[in-house]
Length: 354
Ligand SMILES: [Zn+2]
Image (cartoon, rainbow, N blue to C red; front, side, top):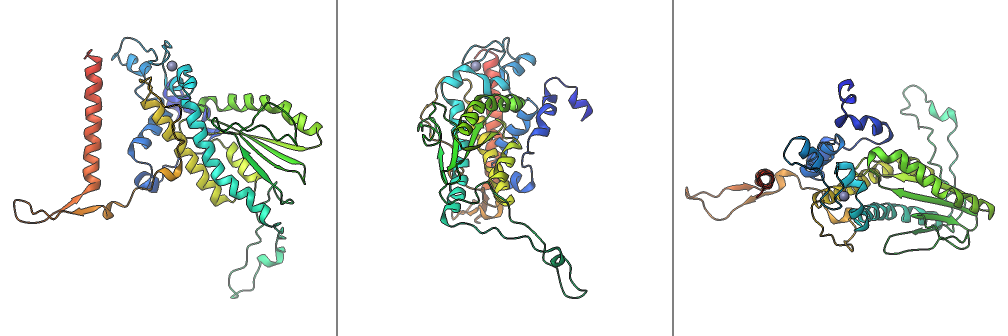
């Protein structure tokens, strides 16, 4: 730890690691999760050890570190993931942002609408005496309190989400403005409005993004208050490498989302952000990019099946006259390794000028 903090390139994660949730590196996620390419990218990207032009120049493989898209002289991972003007105008970052936003909407919309179905009664906490029991009478009931929510007390909650391809004006009944936060949740009955703004910066820029977005909407918060509304502003930062800032937890807690759902949602947005960034990184040498690319959704990929369930028995006998099982998992692993070797040899060719 001490040694890594002194490293100029690999040690940058020390500056942002305490602001984010750790990436899910459980055995379950490593084996059944998003696959080795994404895990490898997240681990390498967190220590800035990805084959970016500036790293290739450092190794002496190329004689310049220019960005292939915008010709910026020093093309680092930070530049590719969050700071390239060509990628920005080509809406690559917008695609990642809206993909994460779509995932948040999929969870938040039903949660908000569930408060409109009926007024949820607030369960009183159990008396402390219920926490004790006589010897031999079994387990005592825990005096737990249901999660409190800012949405409690009204049944007319509305939610609107702002995408790049579906611009939605700020609700006029609250205040007329040209500003369009990503998510607005409001109740006319309570005159309460929750403004949620999402950013997907590189992890080292999380704090700056938070300050920037708070400053941008500070005026709107004052305007809402002057219009006799009760506003709350939440900024959410999801790191480009897939590390989720703790601000998402704070926001979800305020909305009364259960711990289990919070955990699942954080994991999903983490994967979506990392998958999008991997795609952005893989295409950083190409000007071809579909601006109308479909947003990445968690529904678009399925968990990897258990290895023992993908054993295919071939009917055709082998020369020794027996039928054999083909382990597709291992077969896939071999082809992935071959892919890596192929990629490396292609890189070497390009470095030699082929
Ligand atoms: Zn660039």
